[in-house]
Each structure stands twice: as C-alpha cells, then as structure tokens.
Length: 246
Image 1 (cartoon, helix red, strand yellow):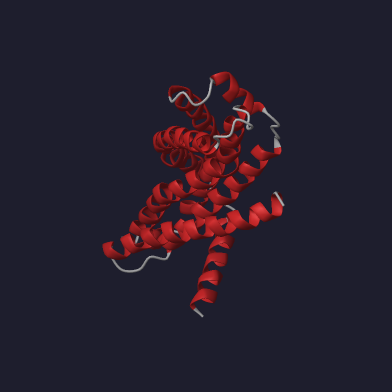
Image 2: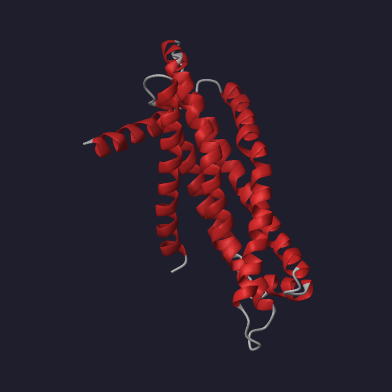
C-alpha cells in the first residue's frame, strides 16, 4: 500500500505541477534563479569530474590495449564511446542527483516544516507549481549543456593525459575521436539527460514537498531524494539503452 500511495501522491503532484500558472512573470524570475543554482553553480564540480575521469578512461583504455595488431587510434575511439554513451550522461547525472537533488529536497522541505508552503496555499497560490515547476524547467534546460561541457572536457583531458603519459599521440587520439562517429550517439545521450533531469527534479521535489516533522526529517528527505533519484536513473538508463540502442 505504501508503494501505491507514493505513486499516487507523486502522480497527483505532477498534475498540480503542470496546471496553469497564476503569473508567468513571477515564474520567469524563479526560473532565472533556478538556472543559476542548478546550472551555473554546478559547472565547477562537473568540469573537475569530467577532466579527471576523462584522463582515467583514456589511461585505462590504453593499458588494456597492448596488442601490436590494434591501431593506436582505438584508444581515442573507445574513450569517445565510453564518455558520450555512458560516462557523461549517466555518471554526471548521478553526481548531480547528489548535489542538485539534495539541495532541492532540503530547500522545499525546510519551507514545508516552516509552514511557508501552507501560507502559499492559504493565499491561493499553487505552491507545487510555484516551487517545483521552475526547478523542473531549469533542470531540463541546463542539464544538456552541462553534459555537453562534460563530454568536451573529458575527451580533451583524455587526449592530453594520454599524450603526457606517452601512450598515444594527439593526432592518433583525435583521429580515434572522429573515427566512425555517429550523431545518434549525441542524440541518445541527450535523450537520457532529459529523462534524468526530470527524474532528479521531480523526485527530489516530491520528498521535500511531503516532508513532515523538523530539521531531522528534512535531512532524511534529502537523503531519500538522492537515493531514490539515483535508483530511478539507473533503472531508466537500462530501459533507455535497451529501447534506443538495441
């Protein structure tokens, strides 16, 4: 029954979320603020992870390709596939689930226990749409840009780390990056990113919106938001891969 109740409340929340807003001007200001908090403030951690993980992927790929029969550009090719298809859209989204998801849940949860959400409801404001919709729209808009930045930095760093380690020349690496490139790989990654962004924003908002108790429960809601967002991302990743690639 708890599972059915959770699914029902989540569905009803989504229904309120996409109902007609009261004043678009107010939502626009909220959207700009969320783009800054969700997107711009996440660039640092995304860049740092992408640079070092791109280097690690290239080094690990090179260490496993020790046959003289395998051309050197295979390192760049394999690194590109790993970064575009899985690392950037999935791993970075999991990291953002921890950073962005916990912030969303704690922010809305704090408003719930301090009765700010009740005050909005009393004033006739659709609190779900006012608080959550800008976060969802901001996530859907900015996440693809973060993932594209991650792809670029990871592949760039992979080339320089590989060259610095003496494992591959930049010419071979760049050729491998370009070899047999299919634009659908980017489309696939961005489709996953949109789905993951929606999951992170709505699931985290759900746990924050229905928080009960005090500060301790806000912390628990933040933890649940991260855990369940990550689980749903992994489940969605499996089905999207099966649907789009196989």
